[in-house]
Image 1: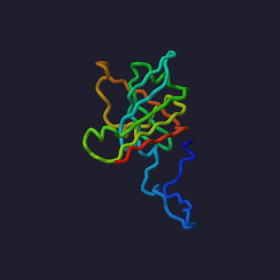
Image 2: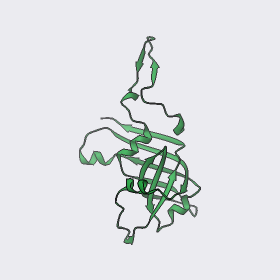
Image 3: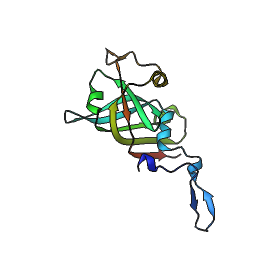
Length: 155
């Protein structure tokens, strides 16, 4: 489903009896908005014809996802101008014994290197000190979600 085609909360549908009832979408958060609930996810694409998966910090901003990642490995350069996949979940809640419903959101879309404004940089919060023993050097990508999927585990 395209990001632009996502149903609005409070969507109305016709019940079989002909009456109108509100769907569960009233209480349900849209998939991209779920990303606001967790700070990190996983970015996947290929580099030199080999797949790679890396962790990234994300924020949701104006219908786009801004990612902060370590620039030392060159992953951001491999993503620039390419279609990437990104996913995040709250599966760690299961380990904490929270007992709530679990979800995962995945999307694909084109990515480009960007330079966030100071307000956006502040939204990312404190950056890591190092990555694999190397001093953390931030790189930022903007991803425009085109195909979004959500999976839930309800308890």
